[in-house]
Length: 153
Image 1 (cartoon, helix red, strand yellow):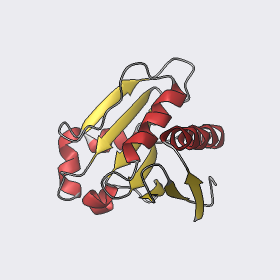
Image 2 (tube, helix red, strand yellow; image 1 turned 90 degrees about the horizontal axis):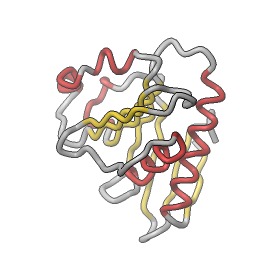
Image 3 (cartoon, rainbow, N blue to C red; image 1 turned 180 degrees about the vertical axis):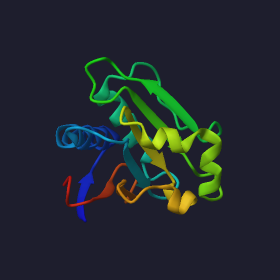
Image 4 (cartoon, rainbow, N blue to C red; image 1 turned 90 degrees about the vertical axis):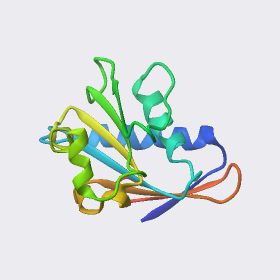
């Protein structure tokens, strides 16, 4: 994994946009969804990262963590590489079985979906191997260490 350091929420959002741009260019013909699994402690910046993804893709309106509703679906503009941005907060889930309650099998296999999941470790094997795992660590109030797979760094 390669480490990147951001020094503000804006820089974290910019990095998220860079990653989405690389994913969109490298995906080609998708046979399934694109999944980003975000790991990090409370306050690490996972939701800030998702806001950067949403901004890059042209989502209008406020993007907040779906902690209590588990999942939020955002329609993307016609020119976006995916049709939906699906933001999942798995913090309150207790195992992969609980993903079925949000229609995970259909969501996770639809090539029109970009899924960004916070707290993927809560659902264990529910996150497919093909997911892009990103770790975010808060260093101080503004600085984040973000570990990225070599494939997108």
